[in-house]
Image 1 (cartoon, helix red, strand yellow):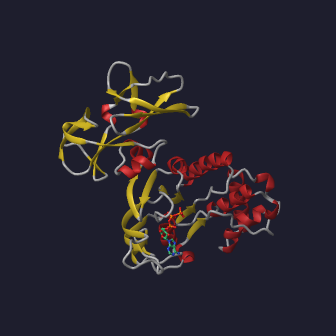
Image 2 (tube, protein in one colour):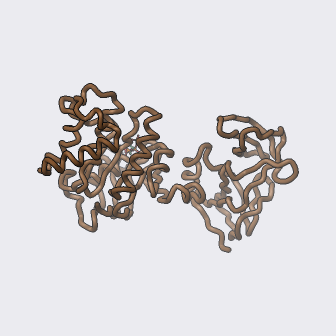
Image 3 (tube, rainbow, N blue to C red):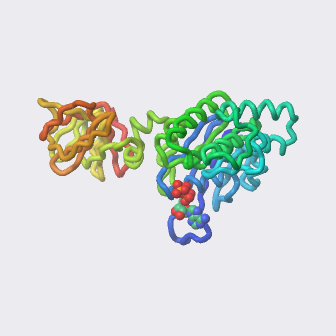
Length: 355
Ligand code: ATP
């Protein structure tokens, strides 16, 4: 396995307007050997472009890619020694399940008994042991994609395994099971894994570190907890979570913010900020009270089964609040913001308190 370093990577497709924005712009990253990373972001943010630059399917317009400190930018995907799993199954229909899994190992001249051992291991991991001798064409789309995953995981000598939205075609109930399985496989074998997805649940359950992208740039790299608690950018706050973080226009001076003419106590002291200032607080960290807090008005109530999402209006701005099932919700509740869970943003970027 290898560390992956991106040095000043930028990419513009030949057909793109030369004066327009790049598909990727000036990325400098160092991803650790053996890490499980997810590239997460909305459609068009550059995830696949970046993955293809790492795999060698695409030459970046600028910058270098290094595996374990060795420059591989000019090497083909085969020479980079990586495994890839794509969105749709790549299987040989005329071969059996076991033969499909054995294929990448045979190609590299591995001894027969070692191949059988490794194939049996992967079959068992994926719950396909009893179908080993069936021809792949008779399998469902789910099972075919499991074989694709298996082909990506079967070699132990690869530098990294790259996954491009590998669970898109998988049935929802199986998705959860395969995600958990992939996580276990990572913990056991410590391959360097990079997993592209636009699904936050997939990213947060699979990865140790999630790389949130937007508009061709990396906005934040963090553990799921860091992305939840201290999003570095308002986009990250709103993209992660359901509903995402409340981002409220505010004025900040010292340890106080003013939101819609209401004072909110902050977790620390901030210098006076004059530019575009926003206060971020997650719906999970706001509670309803009869006696204290900010006066609000209930706008809508959505019971989503595991909890209730209440939308409340302050003077002008709307705030989402998550409360437990069974909570009685007044027409005019008071809102209490958990002080230590408030983040402040200037021009969409997180500002740390000075003390
Ligand atoms: P998705 O989740 O929809 O696959 P993505 O985050 O993987 O999106 P990319 O496919 O990397 O994003 O696309 C990044 C940008 O580059 C987009 O603006 C896209 O339109 C553009 N782009 C991607 N491939 C090409 C191409 N072959 N030629 C021109 N522009 C492209």
